[in-house]
View 1 (cartoon, helix red, strand yellow):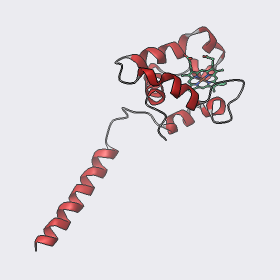
View 2 (cartoon, helix red, strand yellow):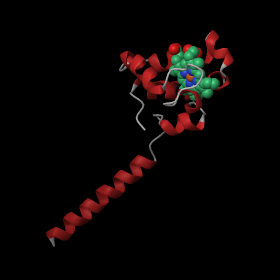
View 3 (cartoon, helix red, strand yellow):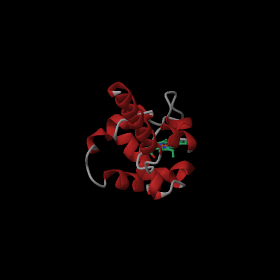
Length: 111
Ligand code: HEC
């Protein structure tokens, strides 16, 4: 009886975990978002046209970890700075997506 109850509790915990994980708002980006926006064509391991790889960018951006507003600020810069005007995928990002992607880079490019 007790065992069955424990198993039931365990199953409920798993169900709860799955539901809360899948209904979480898109508060964090992942490699999928970068893939979707074509970022890897220049920033993948075989970077193109002298662009830094995401691994390099991420190491460079790690100093902003935990800084409020850093992702939004760097995201806005990515969309608007002079060098970026030639890079359509930079320019075309929404502010929201730019912030998410910069946060992903700052946090160390988890898959
Ligand atoms: C056509 C090639 C190309 C694509 C596609 C591209 N980038 Fe870049 N990116 C570059 C180059 C070149 C640089 C270095 C020059 C610069 O800073 O703009 C760069 C720089 C950056 C930087 C550093 C900017 C800084 O402040 O130093 C970030 C962050 C970045 N890219 C993110 C992205 C993201 C996110 C995407 C996808 C939406 C993306 N890039 C798509 C070529 C590209």
